[in-house]
Length: 280
Image 1 (cartoon, rainbow, N blue to C red):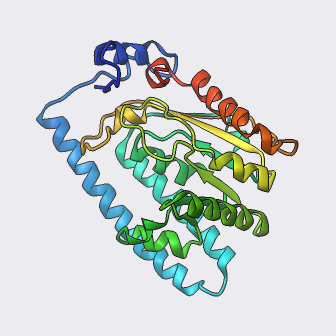
Image 2 (image 1 turned 90 degrees about the vertical axis):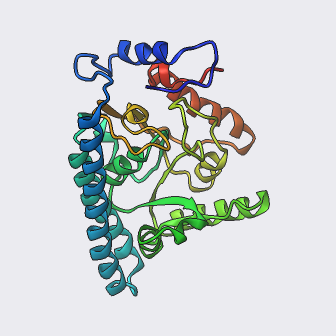
């Protein structure tokens, strides 16, 4: 059941709003519970953990062998993501519909809404070779995955204070341009607990202004129903991934940064189902 941040809108109405959207077929998914569902979910999570531990260990060894070749480590990190992400999604078994995949091969800044760990599996699988992620610097302390993230030459930012964050964003932009990379970023800056779109941070616009890379929005729906925040229960909800056409940023001006940010967020509001749109 989808949680709602509005006391005037019930979870039942939220669920019905999702079911009415074309991306969700209520005949394919009905919210259910019980011991069998809980056991199946537990087995899937254990299987995902085992697979991720094995692939992470293998690619950590590969990365260590490739220490003198930074770009090769980036490509191997992407290959790890493609293989691991696809296997994890296969284990979980959620139906997935992907549209606009022809937009997934450009050198670009890929942005994505974020409401579930499943979003990370999807972007690991679907983003092209030569793409780096951006995460908080503390990710290095995440067991195995954090160390592989750093070995794969993905980027980290310091969010301890505004000045440090600005310096980190500038360094990210320089790295993307110098190494001719694509970037994947969650512009909300954190995961939405309810699945509803959160405000966007300005970092994505500042990176676009400095790199002049096109922006490719990735709109993901259904993951908040499939894997709720702070839950270990996986539900077989259908997922959709929609790549929108690239947005050129060559002519963008710094003084219009706020309007560009609002334009990007409005694209998501227009393409998300009612139950994932912000309430204000």
